[in-house]
Image 1 (cartoon, helix red, strand yellow):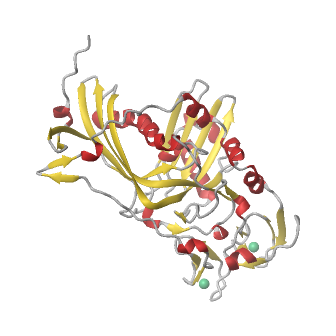
Image 2 (cartoon, helix red, strand yellow):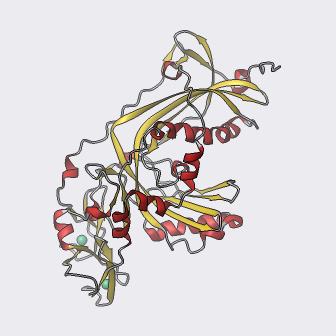
Image 3 (cartoon, rainbow, N blue to C red):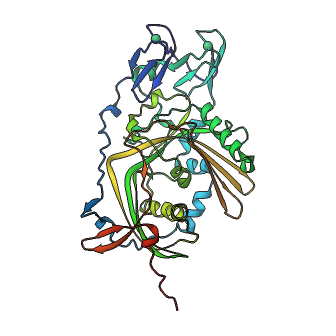
Length: 419
Ligand SMILES: [Zn+2]
Ligand SMILES: [Zn+2]
């Protein structure tokens, strides 16, 4: 054994059939895949946190018209991010993490390890001391630090962020292993060989992370000018992930939808496999309220081009509402890779729940290329998932706030004459 002190290790084996047991965050215990045996995790204070309460409010329909009173007031501050936020976004992710919590980054980077002979197959096995659960690479047997497995306690130095209390109680479980996530990035590189330079050997530097978000319904109405005229439309995104940290690229994170919130689980870090960066929500100040605008600003032209076949959409007027669900601060499982080559940045992310993968390349002049590859077969998602409605062309017809849905061609109005 290398490193300091002694570590007592438990073999995670089924007491009925002897097969390896796997931690299953969704079910809250260890499962035997061979005989179905189940053993609960230790009870921890996270078990007593209130569950997320969804508060969806469907659009009211009156005499066949949409009542859009919730998007009737102009959002005058709607604007792209200020230069300061743009510069901040492009800084190296590790630098941002170090700034937020140098002690956590040091603890996470601690390479002290223990080497032992696997009690099952006898071959040598090495694990980092910071990994609570680890696996023998030869026979697949899983092990855990005996104290962590028995009590559910874990090393809070590993949590990134200052405000560590009660902030990491709820999560979506990881379904993809790091190896599978790397395979998703290989699939992305095969699909887009012209941009695949930065994605060679994707397992190198690929980090698992739990990224904090707050769950909300985001609804908006916009007035848009394009080459064919002016129109209004309404759109909503239910169960939208409102970023609660700027350590990772918020636009790339937004591409990871849909998420399935039917799988919300209690997060018990002591039972996480391998090395997962655990972030808590951070104080974003006045930027917090602006993040939805920045994301809408970026995504809207592309969405409208795709939906209506127009070329040059220009946003004239926006009204939007954000309805946060209750107790809705939670952690999303992602794999993240960032590489830099001169002034070129490559960022790639894999949805740890579904396997959706995306990469974003940013060249020295700031031009960005987004690539995505869908999972090999979508997992079946529950009703409580991210749902983006199509943009619905509308026209206000009478009070109170009643709007008629129209085919796109009928919603177009002549361009106001410009002098
Ligand atoms: Zn068993
Ligand atoms: Zn072994």
